[in-house]
Amino acid sequence: MMTCLAIDDEPLALDLLADNISKIPFLKLVGKCSGAIQANQFLHAQSVDLVFLDIQMPGLTGIQFLQGLSQKPPLVIMVTAYEKYAIDGYNLDVVDYLLKPVSFERLLKAINKAHDKFKSSAARALSPTAAEEFIFVNSEYSLVRIDFHDIAYIEGLKDYVKIFLLSAARPIITRMSMKSLEEKLPSDQFVRVHKSYIVSLSKIVSIRKGRISILKAQVPISEHYKENLTKFIDPRSL
Image (cartoon, rainbow, N blue to C red):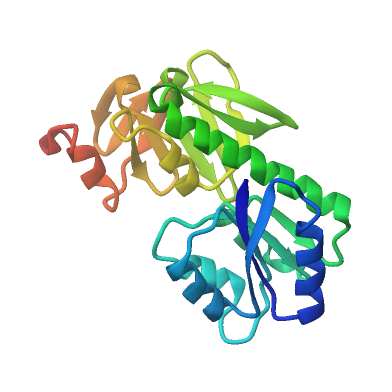
């Protein structure tokens, strides 16, 4: 059972969403809020697994609400009338972005996606060792398994990342933020060395003049992220 919270400043939209949620057997609606400030107070008192979030609300937008959460945010499905915030939503690693009016079928698809993520997180919690060996990413309409030991380095490109593997001539491209991917990688195996690059420590060939040789690439080291690397490598070599 997943607990959820619905947030929308339009009473009719909120009631419709609550009614649709009631039809899903594995969802339990534990709260309805008419604004982000009220929702923030609710989450301080009670944690939930999933949030249905409107964006354009008085006082505090849905985007600002998510950015301001001090604790680890729950899974989020954005439900809004505005398409222009989609990139912001995905940069915040939301599960799905739905445009009003939302059909029940489309809502159910998003909920199933959230439920899959919820079950995966629960499985990782029960088996942390297995969870540290690989992840799955969406690429070319498929879920692709990525083994950590196969990753050489990762390059960020706006809303996408390119994962360069030892076993493949071409990188795996997936829509994901660098921050969200970094959080999924073992911190003792991978280090972020630049706004746009994460490297596998074991795959580094050499470091010279602020650049890392890895595979056939020269990965830059930025001043901002240099300290991350000095935890593992003598700073005099940088």
